[in-house]
Length: 268
Image 1 (tube, rainbow, N blue to C red):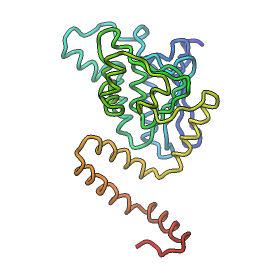
Image 2: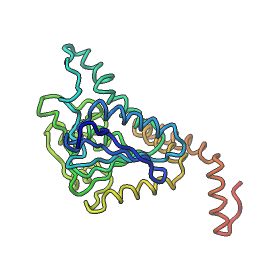
Image 3: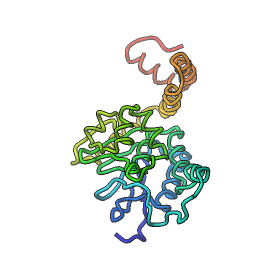
Image 4: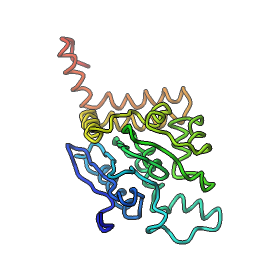
């Protein structure tokens, strides 16, 4: 495939914005163009009420080999610790900012990983709400080979999702995880057969479009908050969030229809 082809493809299917990493000859390494187009897709999902879910997938023998260190990467490496920290926060083609926005946006984002997913690609996957793996997928952080850490949520998000036990396995021990291992770790939600994987991932996204958008958005916020606070405060988060949801006309209509089906009384 020509390098002139778009590095990221996008299409809308049944309310699902589907983006496809499209540099198979470069193992879908994340270029400046890839992340610029991805940034636009995330903003499009956020701002278009007709888009309910974002699905990230890829073409070729890798899902993603990480950041592209050869094509379009910044040429000058910062030579002070402070400059390196700022580059992690604001540079790297905006990677950290984009991944933070993925975590904050109140719509579900699904990553369908069909093949090896490493480095910055794994950090992208960690920023999603749901991760589905094909049987042939595998996961790794090669940064340890060079004596550094994956620093665009590779440590922070991984530890929150899988715990320090498995973060040590991937980051300190620099070991790979196949799809089944990743499932045991809690890194992925489900492992599916290679055959029909793309269709199965899209079907899962279609399922999400049928759920209450308000409930999913509120749940995304509440779950993140509950992960960061103590038990008692987390219970207050539940109560506060549900108090708003139970005033939603959509909830009232759904519960009335449900009670009517059961032959019960209307909700007050």
